Image (cartoon, rainbow, N blue to C red; front, side, top):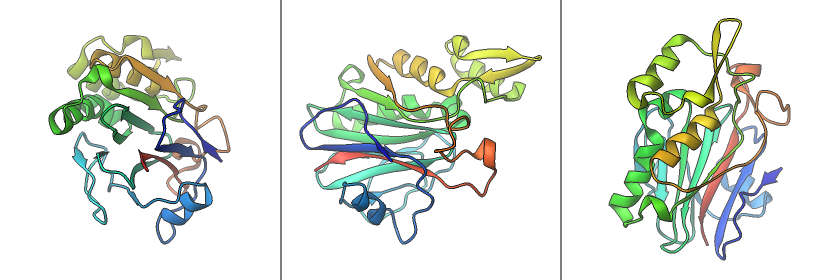
Length: 222
């Protein structure tokens, strides 16, 4: 199933593919079947904070890809981590970011915002963000080292994204992302889709283990 972000922008192609099991020979056949027949670049994700400009035919080691040319999509794959799509409508700039707890704590979202400013002149206030399906607080019990990582970099900024159950911290990744993006100056932040661990239409690493499939999230201009 293809879920669209809350954008109605001429020439912008974007979406969140629920339960895409694998890339097969590449993601292009999956996208064509979903009605988005454009080439796509997906990075080799490393749970870090590196964001680069997409180059057709190249698989960069990064967790964010930006694109400023027409006819090329950028995407990320997830199975509990967050897919975050960023768009600058006026300049026709787009980016796809993979953000699990490690990447979010390390600053991948803020890095993406800054990368778009440095590379294309996009101020944070001109960006719109959509956070796709990801694991939420009710399902995401984490260790104290996760909380420590967020506090070490952003202090109490993400405090409202945390809860405690039976003495263990729980993190709502998407709440944390909204707070981090807002602090970086992104005023328009939306969320699409449910918790991936709760909804069995989605692949979930936490629920099903390493053998689960992946969701594909993508964005770009025709």
